[in-house]
Amino acid sequence: MFPAQKTVEAAAAVARRELKKTSRPAGEFDASRYFRGDHNLGFYNTGSGQVRAFAREIYAAQRERWTLSDAVAFSDLLMPDRYLEVKALGLEVLARYRKEFTPYVLARCKRWLSKNYAANWATTDEMCGVVIGPLLVRHPEMLPDMRAWASHRNMWVRRASLVGLLPLVRSGNVEAVSLVYEIALRLHMDRHDLIHKAVGWALREAGKIEPTRLERYLRSNVGQIPRTTFRYAIERFEPAKRRALLVVRP
Image (tube, rainbow, N blue to C red; front, side, top):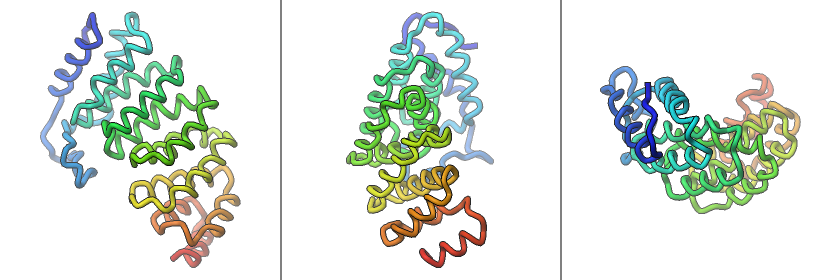
């Protein structure tokens, strides 16, 4: 069990130390294989299940003492760490406070992304899934902020502008679905492959809500859509429909 700590700084220090103890040599599970080229990223090969279990222990130990601000401060201390699992732990602890999320948390996420504390697809997507997405579900009035993120110079902010919308898209939020198409159109010319994949992923999710709209969008904008994006976007269509669309964008 994680021992309760008097300060956020002490809790972060103990969390780092205890998480390091769970590290294991790269064997059958070697996280680095999924991050080719991310030479500054470290791995304990702990596994996401163990990280989440540790986050639950920290939350149980500190929830009588900590406010949302304390949880954000805890994440602030862990996000700059080079180890993937340490970043994930900061996000998973913060996620336990989702019922208290305020727009302030969205600004903090943008700061972490723009400072490259989440400069890999896994940390960025986890932030979107457990923090940004739930925050937007709770505060849909913040959706227009994601439109501005799509033009940010930092590619991780741009990726989050779409991936962060997915929880609302899956709930059928009409504004979020329309925003996916709007942002996608702006990002088709992006030079980064990880943006192309994110756009395709978001379009595919939007297409689950309105398949006809997705097909119409793909046919209308085929000249602008990168091949990677197009192929991701059509993955959930029936085989015959996929074949027909691949003729349009081989």
